[in-house]
Length: 205
Image (tube, rainbow, N blue to C red):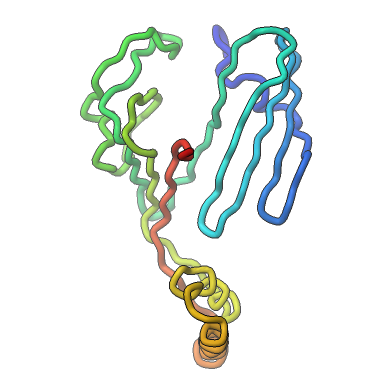
């Protein structure tokens, strides 16, 4: 996308799996081609938690001194019946030129760019670099419904802090009773309503 390489070298390259487990995978991409003279490689690790996805990305191994820029370019599907809410606790953005390249100047956010209160995205067209954010960005989806059978609902409860704190001789009979009730009295189908929240920011320490 002239005149700048907005998406870098790795977005359309093959990534080799170098390590994986049931909850994590580490992949490697060799940096070459497109006139890139510095060599090197990128590593990224994706780790699934009970309620989280942790992403790590690093670059190194250059054959000569050169530039580096790291990041992801995620997108989020809007729910069909409601809007997304986006909260970025930042009061300033970088000034961009006609090619969307930062000029080095900083300006205050305009009213439509101000996301500190977590407003619905609505008709906003956002292509900005927010700076000096005081907390991770937060994307909220409005309430959705997830369905479980009896065993699945019991597994969901087992993963929560309330049930993890119970002794196993108390927790497991209780969860078995809940699963049996869902199977026999609810047609083996139970719903969970929830508000999905994604926090995007640098991991501490």
